[in-house]
Image 1 (cartoon, rainbow, N blue to C red):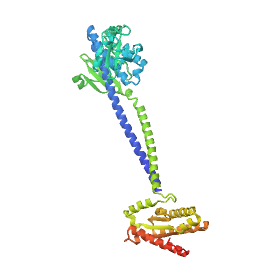
Image 2: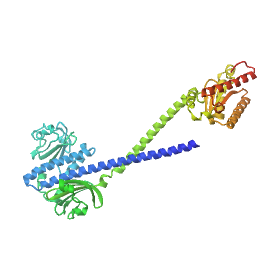
Image 3: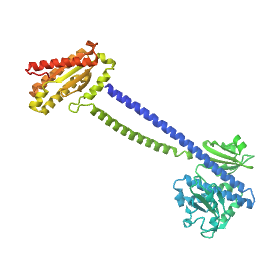
Image 4: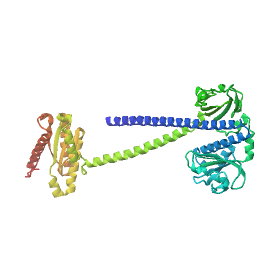
Length: 484
């Protein structure tokens, strides 16, 4: 009963431990994901803020200066496209998605070049296979092969494939595995040159879920343009966005923001006349966390189940091997090997003074083997072992140490020993009457408390002598002239 309760307690404790470990792992995973999402949000808002700054500065120059600035803008768009392609799975080969991004980025073409300068993907499949060696227009970008830190933008030039007037900008992706080129037709270029109003600048920016882009007057704080039209004309402070000391000293700042009571991440840039703010809503960027945590939990539970199954199988196998190594195959009792190990351990056991050592020997085994066969002898051994175990097993360990020899090391008081011995004798007599063959076991029993001066080996020898004495009396009573 105590073992069952202990097993249930251990199971409860193990469940609590596993639950705590899973909760800790999920907490760590949540912290890692939230931090990763925050850093990604700051990168995204900074990228968009930089792009807005470039566009705004473009609108502050004359036409030629605007063209030069637009080149930088197109390179930025190429970098933005590169960033999107690198961070959206499957985007590199998804033409439809690339076309959608091209529309969002307000560009006409997207081409992907490998490290040799050959087009392998993009929004115009008929251009696949063209390389920097295909013509003079494309050869302009050969320096890109020598310097992966380089970004280039070409003037309006007839392209190699169709002699169509285009302006192309190109850059390497962050990993340096491929180049991204974006193309814009001259008509679109002129439309952008005329887009001098802040509202048009904002409207030309790509829209992302949960991202708001704002341009405000630096002196007054009035919002001049925003992707959320109802915010135009309001004060920047009214949205919970305030210029920080870092912004005033360095011209840029990233910080957690609480815009209209919604937590988010903000990047703010200061220009001569404008303040640019890009805010990404935290709930949008963190919306993948619950599903991811659920998947992680399922994987962890599966892993715990598999590991538990494997450990249980291995434990049972080890226990089974240990049991087989220490168990007598015929009787199921502990064998001589287990007896040797336990005898060594008993010498150091503080309970040794309470030990009762018993030697038992089956009488008449050789006669049964010789006259009735070994199966009959085995039957006597099996029943003798069973009776020994049933009568004395609750008080200690029972061993088969030889062919017809048994040992019991018991922790038993006098009354219990007397009842067990009587029960053992009764079982022998009952079996003998029922089967018409005699089952008899000679015993020698010595209590350590009666011989405190004896060592464990001497105690075993004393029990052997008493057993041999009982065995001689058994054979003499039946007229057999043999010691055992």
